[in-house]
Length: 83
Image (cartoon, rainbow, N blue to C red; front, side, top):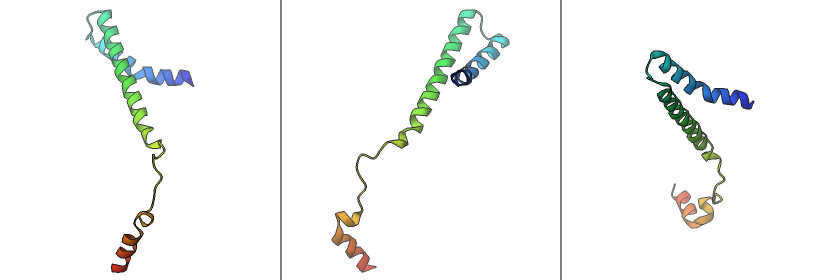
């Protein structure tokens, strides 16, 4: 499973840099490697940030929910009597 995840992680930056390399964008190997590492970092940041944001909603609430009728019983009954 780890091999599949690694391949899926490396596939986008490798394919983009190879396409740019074949197009003749990079003048030498150093520029090619620099661009590959930049794309790899951006891909890792994108995956990390999106994973972090997707798990933010699973936190436990800091306070327990309380019905307004428990906090303000006379106001709650007053509102229902006027309707």
